[in-house]
Structure formats: structure tokens, C-alpha cells
Image 1 (cartoon, rainbow, N blue to C red):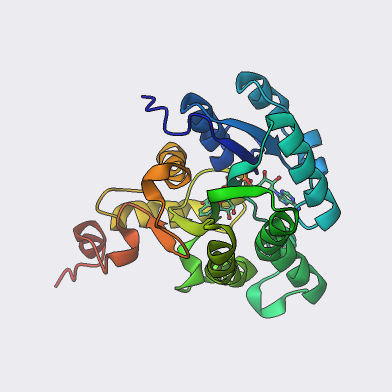
Image 2 (cartoon, rainbow, N blue to C red; image 1 turned 180 degrees about the horizontal axis):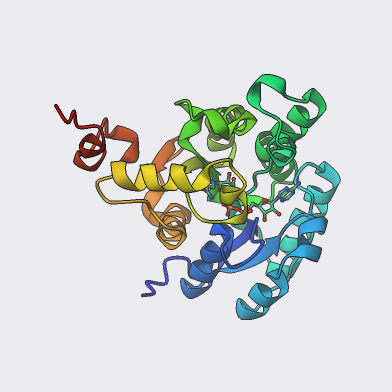
Length: 272
Ligand SMILES: NC(=O)c1ccc[n+]([C@@H]2O[C@H](COP(=O)([O-])OP(=O)(O)OC[C@H]3O[C@@H](n4cnc5c(N)ncnc54)[C@H](O)[C@@H]3O)[C@@H](O)[C@H]2O)c1
């Protein structure tokens, strides 16, 4: 259902790789809600993915940008403003990647060059997006920036590896920059801490299936899927959440505040 919550708003959506991507669903929902936006992803992802189809569906263009490159980000903001005909009202940062996870390095034997890359791609890129936007004064007053996180930022999920550190840093940047950008232009910055979701990034985590099923069994509402995550992003881009900033918002069907569920208790019942 469309409420036209984003009518007249201009955005940039990072991270749509294929139709499973959370950003893909956000783009489809933003389009339904009347927004105009530019899609962006790393040049290498553009070659692998199917983002051109999404651009056609949403009647927009793709501007490549490696989110670790300030030069690429400058070009992206400048061209997006030109293409959309005005400053940006919302940004989705849906970017995450750990080369250590990709290469199967456990947390106790990390490669430190790769660890730097994990943090640069998955966390510092949010700072680079915000600092570049502020320098170019590219985001309108009361604009909204949302980045996607995971509860491994607060609690240990051993196989989430160095991405746990990346997500802690991401949430910290959202708080720290949220203060700065709030003062500068009343721009709000938040993270959404999403349930495990079946996507390329999600499925790359060791034991993802067990992870997913465990969260499903714990959460009273079950796992939140990517479409409901997209709906939540839309509310945060809309004018209905103008005073929400510097928050990490759990979107996880209640997982984060559930100690144990009846389903999990049954599995551990003492047969004696
Ligand atoms: N899938 C899950 O279980 C889950 C749960 C919580 C949070 N998240 C987060 O949601 C976000 C989106 O992930 P997803 O699950 O949709 O998977 P995805 O693999 O579809 O999206 C990750 C995106 O990051 C992009 N990316 C990687 N390196 C980049 C770079 N240098 N510059 C620009 N883009 C780059 C990829 O091309 C891809 O489009 C990530 O931050 C992820 O950590 C995912």
C-alpha cells in the first residue's frame, strides 16, 4: 500500500546488489511512496549484480561509487543533485563486507590489512558519506540518513567475526555524526539493527542458517524480513519521524529484548 510518504523527496540509495538486497526493497518502496532517487553501488558490484533492472523499474539512474573513496562520493553527491534537481533529503547506507569473513579467517587469526578494509567499507564509509555531504552542503534541512546494523554490535555472535566490531563503530559514527549534522542542518542520522535476513551479505556469515532459525525461534514476532525493514526505513525518511536521531533502532521482531522463548526452552528440557 502506498501512503505517498516520500512525495517530493530526493534520495540516494546505496547497496542494492540483487533482488534479495535490503536496499533493493527500500528502492522499490521509496519509488511506491513517491520519492525520486539515485541508486549507487561499488563499480565491481555493478558488474556482478542486476542493478540496471532496478533502475529501470524505478525510472532512475545508477551512479557508481566505491563508498570508501571520498572522490567517488563527491562525484555521487554532485551528480545526484544535478540529476534530481535539488539537495538530497534521504540517504540509505546499506553497505557491509568483511574480506576476513570472505577468506574464512576466524576472529582469533584476523589479517590486519583485511580488518582495516572491513572497517573502511562497513563503518568508516558512513563517516565519509556524512563528511562529504556536509562539506558540499548536499543534504536538505531535516534530511534523514539511515545505515543498517546488526545486534552483534552489542552482544557476542562468535561467527559474525570482525563485522561485529564494524557494526559497533557504525553505530557510534551514527551517534557522533548525528550530533554534528543535527546542529548543522537538523539532519538526523540513525541505524536500524535488522534481524538476520537472507541476502548475499547475510548468507556469507558462517552458520547463517542456524543463526536465522535461532532468531526466528526467539523472537515473539519472528524474524523481520527485508520488505518490513524497507517499510521501517521509509518511515525514518519521512517527515513523521523528524525528532528521531542518533539512535540505534532494533527492527528484529522483539529478539533484542527476549531472554528465552518457549520454543527454545522445549529444546533444552531435562528428560528426567
Ligand atoms: N542480511 C542480514 O542478515 C543483515 C542483518 C543486519 C544488517 N545487515 C546489513 O544490511 C546491509 C545490507 O546488506 P544486505 O544483507 O542487503 O546484503 P547485500 O550483499 O545485498 O548488500 C551489501 C551491499 O554492500 C555493497 N558494498 C560492498 N562494498 C562496497 C563498497 N566498497 N562501496 C559501496 N558498496 C559496497 C555491496 O555491493 C552490496 O550491494 C549491510 O550493512 C549488512 O551488514 C544485514
